[in-house]
Image (cartoon, rainbow, N blue to C red; front, side, top):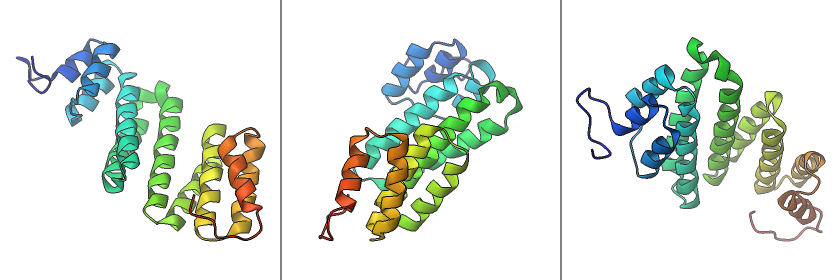
Length: 196
């Protein structure tokens, strides 16, 4: 059976792997480029809800690859698709037991969207998203959010705001090299510093 060929019941290999709760097969199929369809998500909800995390991870990984290739619109498309599916999953009554995990995934997706916005030059939007995230997020996301806000304020040449955010981030992760480097850069006498 080919990766995009259906069986007699009209199911794709990725759906069969989910229905059989075969996580290694699911990961292998996704790595080979199996497409995510509405039916894929539905099969996961009905048969193997934990597979949702594998699907979200795949979308996030794809977005990360596109981000590194500077294909920001494509990365944003993947992230918005993931966010939409995550929001739908959070509203699904059958997935109540996965609620906390889905909330964490949602925070990671939103954080990734903020990173893409910054790279697109939509800095204020990235700042606003980070600020909204910080209200109810885990420590890791809070740290990432503060660090990204510091970088955004640096981009806008608001050094004092950038310093305040990076100092808050360092309180959460005192040994984080990137945060320490940013703080050192921000405390230098005013120089022409390249965009981080």
